[in-house]
Image (cartoon, rainbow, N blue to C red; front, top):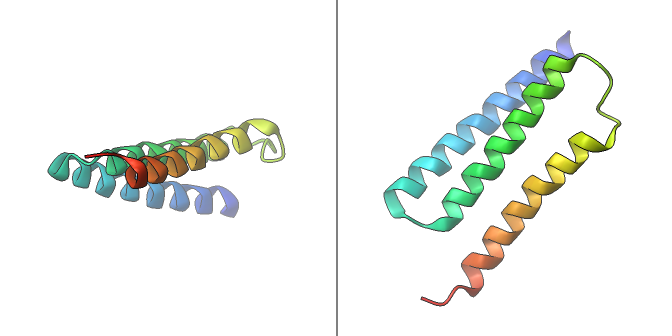
Length: 86
């Protein structure tokens, strides 16, 4: 029960971060902020689904694959920002 509450709180934090990055993306038009918003939204959805399932799927491959994909999005966004020609 307490673990589900913590997962929900972490998901809310990810969602707040995604909202901030989305706002920065809309104001500046910089792709980095859009990619960060997408990655944090993905992490938030992942935590919500883990809390909703109530089974011990934390040790399976799917949650780790989703997290890995989110961090790959962040890494690609940083690389894109640093090597983009303007």
